[in-house]
Amino acid sequence: MQDIALDKILQATKNSDNAFAEIFIESSELEELNFSNNKLESYKHGSDQGAGIRLIEGLDSAYAYSNDLNEQNLHALAQSLKSAFPAAASHKKITLKKQGTNYLKNSKHLDPLQDHKQKLALCEEANELARQKSPLVHQVEIQLNQSLSQRLIANSDGLLVNSPLDQITLAITITIKKDDDLITALEALAFTGNFKDILKQDWKSKVIQTTERAIQQLSARTIKGGPMPVVISSEAGGTLIHEAVGHGLEGDLVAENLSVFKNKLGTAIASPKITVIDDPTLSKNYGSYPYDDEGTKTQKTVLIENGILKNYLCDRLAAKRLQLQPTGNARRESYEHRPLVRMSNTYVAPGSDNPQEILASVDKGLFVKRMGGGQVDTVTGEFVFEAEEAYLIKNGKITDPIKNASLIGNGPRLLKEIDMIGNDLHFCSGVCGKDNQSVPVTDAIPTLRIPNMVVGGK
Image (cartoon, rainbow, N blue to C red; front, top):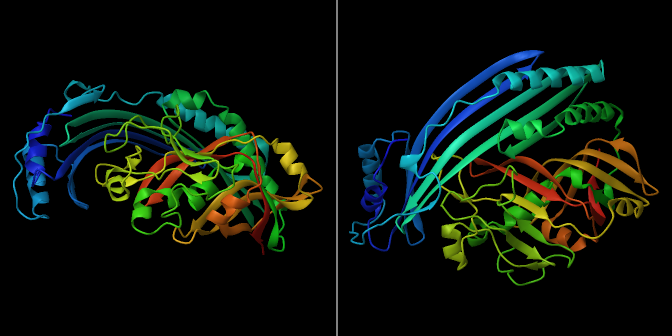
């Protein structure tokens, strides 16, 4: 990155003393390994840099970006934003105050990504482990992605923050073939960190477990749908709470009347046993970051406490519209995108129930070990989710594997109906999409029991 007179660009952006100007500069480096068909299929190593400038007047905003960091070009970009608003003048001088570390002009170029041979060796070993597990293994695909980025945010309030962010992901996809049946299972490990954080994990067990899960699904059968008790394992990941509840607590959707939780602050919206938290400060999690993409220092936000709605997730604009404070949840996919309200590490706090006792409490029902994809209407709270890995519960024990099952319900109603909460917690990493942007997240739930839930079957 070159030295840029950020204060002058911000000054050039502001069209009035009441306006707010912001510049976001990003430099990133990415390495991707794709191993399949018993060999390294592709390798990519590249870099990108650019800047986005935003101008806010009242509740209206305009955004423009460029991959040209030449200062003259950024001044032209700033001037172009002014045309979106009535002509005026700004006289307040902008003085930037540094926060955090690694200020732009002192930052070094990113070092070349390391450990390429070790990464390839891991892919080869993972491939061998899966194929040794069963002759039914048809395909093994291993993807290793590592990114290094520096994100600098400055605004007309005087904020200046540089927020480095390194991330690593290992994705394992196993395909089993028997006669004409093809079954695929996948698993992912993802962290805010580097390749060493992958090596510290028991990734070999993940490969074996993923292979076993695919094989087991060959014998899965369908069930007749209908209402029944459902136990959702902590290993299922937090997809349910993320989709059915979390999105409805994003402040921009609340402000736009697109959330079933609008005007519910301070009211009971869940069982007194339920506490929901979003926390980007958690160490190493894939959804962790020190500052959000507006430069707000991150914090732990309690959204629901003992059933009471306490807060919404907010960026600058949502906080202004809802008369709340920003929570550090403004995120963007890259400099090409404006910031949006997004979740980070979202989870239901553990309860006091033993997971085995929760399972034993159900005479006949469904045990969901892994959640799949689904959809939710944030306005009504209605949702449908696939149960990627599920089993029948008979007399308190896990029995037959089930396929093609789905969970059908309503987010607010679900929050009130959960009656047992385990003392365990298991985070799962993933990518969340919203308004054509994707950002890394992690979600988690303890083992949960819903006494009466609609299960879809075939």
